[in-house]
Image (cartoon, rainbow over all chains, first blue to last red; front, side):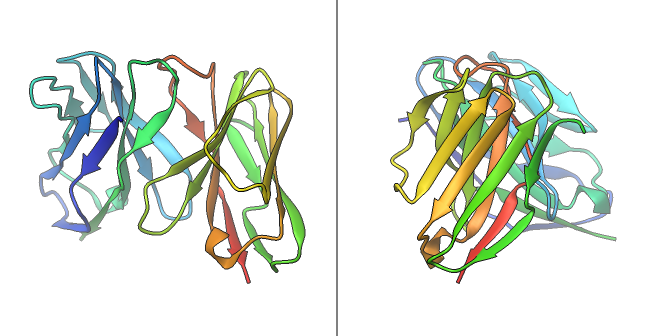
Length: 113
Length: 114
């Protein structure tokens, strides 16, 4: 079945450092890919998405590119802030169109001043 | 109110209690979802409703009973829960179930079962 694998956390960075959170997926066909963010004490917010190969999703300085050849959707940000500290979830909806979101296990990011 | 709201935000209950979680969406969506988020586990989809009809039950124990009276409201009725049911319960909505429609999440109810 479809699945998502994220890098283990926590990831600890200093402010203004470069961020990469790796995400790879297993799915048939062409799934839609998402990054969600969960700030402490809150629900999940959609951060960005990409629906076809080579699409780049971007929002709030975060970017991720849908790479079909490597089945990856890595999240990047050039300069993180303390306010980016949160848990980041990579997810997919498979091409079977059931609408079922499959999540990775989440990666905790801690940014220190 | 905008988006997806959930009440209560925190709930502590004993194993013999009966309680209900409420979710309301103000986005005009037709599909609603319940997820369970436990520590150190991926989010688990529990139930899906599309136009008030349940379209998915992800092998959830019968001590969890969902109810969807209309497309804007979703409840999760709880009875005789176990301590391992303690988790964050998240509600989400989307324009339709199926397809690639993004889901919008509420803030969750933090449930503790004693």
